[in-house]
Amino acid sequence: MAFRKRNVALARSPAESPAAEAPSSPASHAPAAAPTPGTRPSPIDGRPTTSTGTPSLDSILAGHAGLPLGNSVLIGESGTTDYAGALLRFYAAEGVVQGHQVHVVGMGEVWGRELPGIAEEKDKRREGKERAEKMKIAWRYEGLGAHGSSRERGSPAPSTGDAAGEAAVFCHTFDLARRLTLPVGSAIDYIPIPRTTGSPFAEILKNLQKQIAKSSPGSIHRLVIPSLLSPALYASGASHPSVVLPFLHGLRALLRKYSTRLTAVITLPLTLYPRSSGVVRWMEILSDGVFELSPFPYSHMESLATSAGTTMDEERPQGIFAVHKLPVFHERGGGGSTEGLGEDLAFTLSRRKFVVAKFSLPPMEGDTEAQEAAVREASGNAMPRKQDLEF
Image 1 (tube, rainbow, N blue to C red):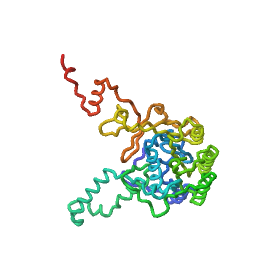
Image 2: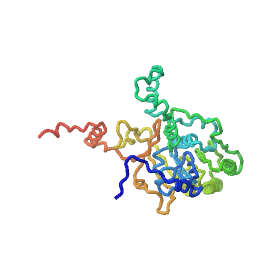
Image 3: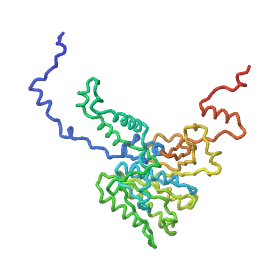
Image 4: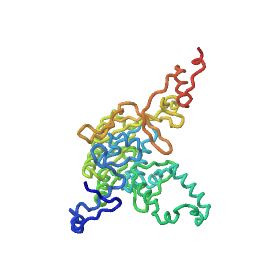
């Protein structure tokens, strides 16, 4: 049995060191390609995905935890509200923050200046207050009495890691009360709707293709189309099937051509173009994902928009969120989180987030005992009643 002296480093022989240090192949030491900001591989099949700016909507998209590149989403909304417009603003703001090229059809610079800003987290607010309190003490006396203060001064600042962590954020939290500061460059490309007697969509597709072709090969593009076929933006002939359907065909061809660089989100006013019409059915077929927002009537919101699972800290649902079509990207049938999509979903738009969650009706009006039990559970007071304690 051989014994070896402890606490002695083993040295390699000089004959072995050059061979061990020689690179086996130049590819092994090649630096790994940095991922594109705002994208990450899908947990299902590894295809690149990007965030819609809404975490709950990302979780619905067939288990890919985001919108896969090269696909489109059609969001229909009934009524006169603009909840779908909030989803578009979150989608566009996420693209601007990630450095993507955002193309907006039919809107001007005013729409871009109304994008929501990034919400300030509570931890950052607390750090700001602590930093303000520390500034009251002179910096030269702050480190006195601290063991190893000289070594801490020479150590690298931890802010670089924090900056790297912030740069790797996939989906940001936005605040509708804030306004996003646009970068100096042309972060948003506004595509006007041409006023012609023919189809206005041919010029839109040509402009979009030109912008993508002249950009860098690794850039990501987001197409935002608010209120498609709205009479306030489009001529009356734009809603004809021979005009709008070739546009969606051409858009789908562009999405498949730039399958790793382009995504699109479109909103449609269902009050003017209901889902029962044939042109809307064809539009849904030519879209990869189809959602519908049905806001509750304002007069009955207090009675209908009360979920049994809501608490006092949560916002009440403001409408029904219906999933009519999900993108299918996998040979197994599209994602692993499709469970529960057959259930009723409701959406809630608050100041900082758009949340999609399961919805359940409140107890019946005559069932006072169930209502009292729901109120006790919501308030956290689960004390039994007096008659339950009597023997």
